[in-house]
Image (cartoon, rainbow, N blue to C red):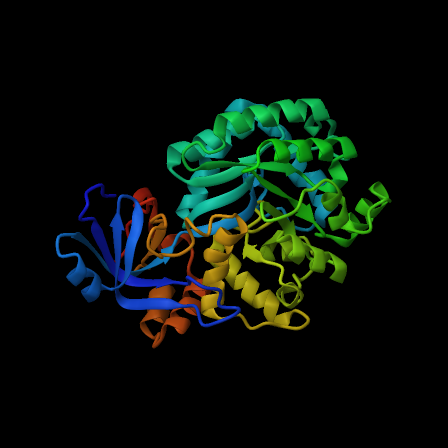
Length: 440
């Protein structure tokens, strides 16, 4: 957005959570705020008058009438499943068989994969997401299409080849040798290239043999800065099947533990049905969980035991889980999180600042990027979303009645969606603008 030493001040209402609101009051908010962006980084954030006085030479971009939040961070989603959103009525394993896996087989066609990747990346940005941890495809060429689409868009993306050698459709299986070769090639091509990172990605334990998990272990050892992602404890039938497939493991997490596939580089999606020993070991290893509220409900998997994770000290961030999840919007996922946690055993009435944290900084912490993104502390990348509802919208009417920032956030997570996303910036550079005409 700017490359000179003076920088540019973004003037708007600004909200962010530079700390963990599950532990302390973390919300920092400014009605007339200023975000100083210099060389793609957040150089200062606070009241506009103070930021302006300290930086008299900076240009001013006046976005008053809207809100600036840190870029939203999605900790789990699937690019090949874009076209199966809304395929309801099945539980996990049946849903995979009838909807997800047939669509994922189409990614063998590189023209289809490229088109899907471009639409997927656009959909992330259009909903205010600036960083995403994404399951790639079972095909190396299609996974490369995703990386290239993200690179062209400017989105910050972490992904990898999906690895499986049993229990799926035969056309989605690879040999461990081929999975190693293709993964190693993709790591060399894309990991650390611009805003791209690689994640070793076995689909789930049920579809991976011991030999394939050993390949994952080797890849993680050979490339110590790549991430790891998979699924865990999503559905009771799945959990029972994993127990039969790995009789030597004490539990689902134990399968990944045996191969060293846990720790502060690992994100495991769902964890709806963990045991107390699993939670204890996940916390000790600093393994993170991707919390997928709409997907968990849509597939009937269950209610995420948030309080048990908090009590055990297991970190988690918010995720859309497209296409079992119902949209690309982390604002909508925040609402689903609030609604499901209200009726969960040991209910937690989530606050607005907790929802904001889950959609931003918590994701950065899960991905090992909290020193770079997630809030507007000086030195972090200037990743932000500019939200401004149309004047005649229900969101605009509700925001007019907000008397404090907490209410503003709960209204935003209740009524906000892609229509209110006006602009998205990564590293201070605009990667998406909403050109739809409406009464401002």
